[in-house]
Amino acid sequence: MSPMDAAPRPAPPRINPLQRIWLRELGMERLWLRTPPAVPVAKVAVAGDGAVPGQAPPGVSPGGPNVAPHSPIVAPSPAEARRDAPAAAPLAEAAPDATPAVVPAVARTAPAEPATGRASAIPPSILNRTGPPPRPAPKVEVQEEAPPPIPVAEAVKDANLEQLAAQVVACAACGLCKGRRHAVVGQGAQPTRWLVVGEAPGEQEDRQGQPFVGRSGQLLDAMLAAVGMSRERDVFITNVIKCRPPGNRNPKPEEIAACSPYLMRQIALLKPERILVLGRFAAQTLLGTDATIGNLRGRVHHLKTDEGVQIPVIVSYHPAYLLRSPSEKARAWQDLKLAAREL
Ligand code: URA
Image (cartoon, rainbow, N blue to C red; front, side, top):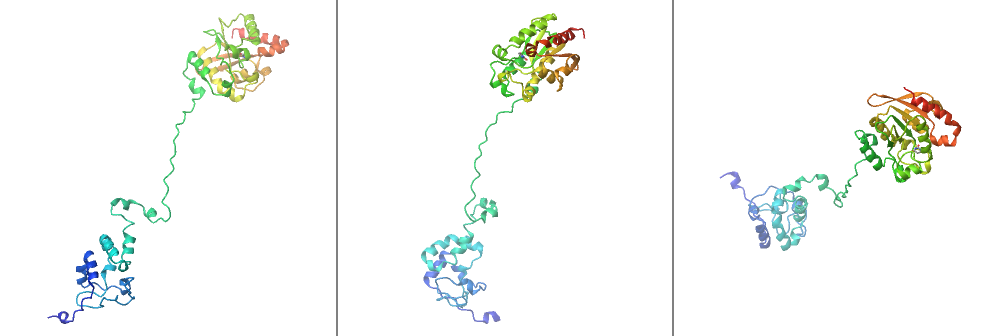
């Protein structure tokens, strides 16, 4: 017999029948009969039992041969607490006063972490958050945007004359399309000996959709005829701006910039022998200068095409100006003779 055997065993704690039923329901009756490790007395106090910290609850013996004086029910390991949680419910119902130390412990561990593996994927930052749950992100309606318009210079790059005319008619690259009756693409002979370039359609041109059909046009026809040229046979007539500016105002730089790719493409397609440019806007646009008419006329300029061809360019007064200043017709006559010369 060992000294241990010889030692007197502590008496088992006395529990009443109701407590025994609870223990059985909890599956812990067996545990009760084992000697548990020492548990700090403060942890075993069961509210409502009249327990005093440091003392055994009333009705529970502080000693006994097989059973520790302190109840393991109220201090299970967290794992045990979770496992035993369902059994705690009847306990709470049966003896609400005997359970507060257990229920909060279970409540602290179980609800926050459901048994499914999915919950563990919730980041702690969200699990530990206090306050209302995060709102779902508002739905953003993605509106299909219209494709950006193709720049005129890009659109005309491979167009033939027919396609170019259709593009001009459909063009909305500047605001002038809003006030026009007709876009005026151009008109004349092909092959083209002379290309005559004016500024922009006036009222009559806007009505009829043809270039130089008003009073200015009649003067132009007369001037061309004086050097043996006709728009039916030799000359193609067009303008830098294809739509009439309201009230025949001067074209704005942005309108000229938007529209001039059409003229450049016409030149590339028509391949005229020479170009007669009428007025300041047309001359400055084609020659890329802000020099005055007086400065530009009286000599032959050249326009180099994308294909590297040099086209002679002659600058003269606009017929509308000549109508207002007939004395300048003599100079215009000089310009025509220059253009008609073998260059
Ligand atoms: N003035 C121009 O410059 N072009 C026309 O077509 C008519 C008048």
